[in-house]
Length: 468
Image (cartoon, rainbow, N blue to C red):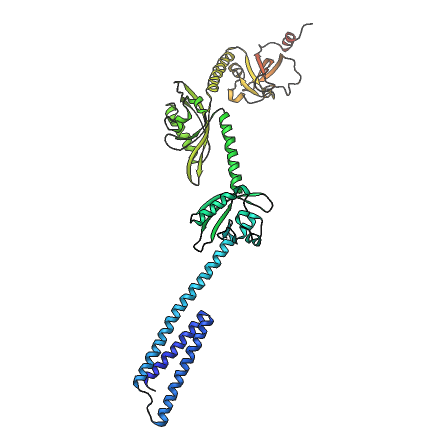
């Protein structure tokens, strides 16, 4: 056997091995049929070569020649190259077919698991494919829907709009339509249908249940309605603003005009800002309090003065908080109320209280106020000097704790008391009691404590004894 002939056999053998591995990898009956043909051709060629060698040895004749051997080698090389090209082409086809199969399987699974109803229609509107979500949405089985036209699912008044939408889809338009599906239990389900035509003439659509959205929208509308009614009748200003240097307003109710003299439109259009109305003495304090609260994500409360449009000053009490989204501060929201009247009343009360304290401290006898439990809430300077205590040491304690008595019992006032001085000595006093009606806590009383001169106790008892 010539070397050329031997190379031809080897090439065909390699081709057989290569196509065998291809068959094992592709696992397709068509490839195995080709493997069988290649093996048969290879065996035939090998047998032919052995017969030829045997004849040459036995009869000493030369069969064929170098030209035929070269032709056989070329044919073997071409066969091997063809096998390799064939494998690559067939392999790509099988891989593409396998990928297409997986894609179709994934597509079907996505459609099956989708929360929205997915369907395909014929040009006449007849359902050809539906998923489980559409079945749940309509209350019908897959077989029932496949025998149904989409116009059979919508209420009669909405059929014309569905028919018009189908015509638009057939003209190549993509349609987004809000309609209703009639559930098998005879209630209407609001849906949003998005549909378009595919290249093969079918119509594919997605139906989304709007029931929860409608409920949310209705609840939101109701909440907004209640909020606007509340905002209209609240005795103060509700606001939403940006956290910038001007506290630019995004929302305000109409009460701001009563508070400032400016309309809410002037604030919303940024023609005027609360920052411009702050009293110079309160300006820094407002920003400091608000910024400190926001850093700790806490609500803030601050009192300050603003200048009314008429030139007067108003006291304002503001409470508010930051509106955060994650770590980002988006807005400030809060409530403003006019406390000018309260401030003026408090200033007046403080003046009255100061005058009464001056009056109480000017009398020569001791004076104190006790609540229903007998705890001292106020004492004048004369009583404190009489017993040697400071105000913070005396107030807040039981009046009885400064006496030698264990119990007040049922005393007729005025009554004689032995009071303990801070240094431990005993001071004899006469205590008179007058209830305070209609002020503060129930049971409050005013005690007048008069120091007694150093005289005998019987004589004093006789002085206080009622005459008969």
